[in-house]
Length: 346
Ligand code: AVJ
Image (cartoon, rainbow, N blue to C red; front, side):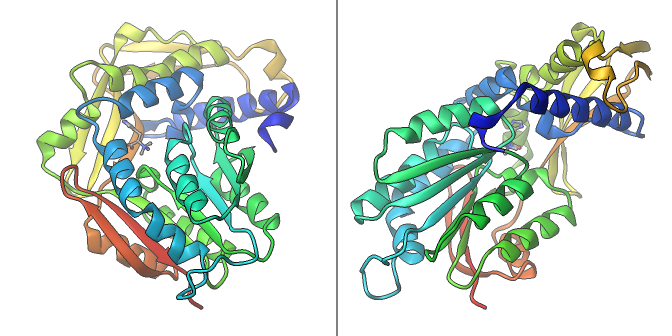
């Protein structure tokens, strides 16, 4: 589905899926909610604010690396090796989880300097992120931009179906890979690999393991923006699914799980309580949107996100397991963040 083709019916179906997922995931032990639902319009704005926090280094580190290495990335993937000449065919660039689109601008500028164009596909679950990045990139005349409000898998399949003879570069940036557990991360990278052909590449941005104090500040910042980002999930359930979450009764908790190499975000119930979820009548026509009640014990948590952190070699190994070779790896030593260019050679 293209963002411009979003219809009321589709967003109703999306909300029905949200209702079914919330109902199922709050009945699990431990209770959980999928992190993709953090990104409604307010959630996307709060995430943009997180990216500017002095304690959250991922976005700035990745931007520094892209500013330095974009010309090299473009010439390695988009220009035939050794010739320094442009291919006659147009490269396709697909960004999975485009956010505001600012990182793609850096690559697009490097393409322009090399005299190349590109067909750009933006895949994001957030319509506000898509609109913003379409606006940001729409001003650039040497690229064409299509937005897809889809999951990564569906969006990538749609974008790959539209490619022509040029090389394809998939961008999975901002440590978005970190939201995937194992073996889901392996399966996901394998599905990207399977959508690609010889000469194509995946540019993977992934956050590295660093001292616990730095991780805690990044995910539980002194301004409370990350707490607002997390608790907004309850605001969203209240607004879209007619729930009665008392926001003051849930606290943001971020923990570093060293054994699993991940930061976990949770929402902790501050008292024993029951919450009623009563989806609006328009949704009831669709399956699994019956009203329900969720009971919380004091101290019980809803697990809302995992952000895995890696060692540089672990990123290469993950790529290798999915059928990629490492073409290059660049590391920002200030924030401990890695950008890895993985290529398909068979
Ligand atoms: C966009 C998934 C990479 O995990 O660091 C930021 C989201 N969560 N602060 C991350 C997030 C809390 C972010 N990702």
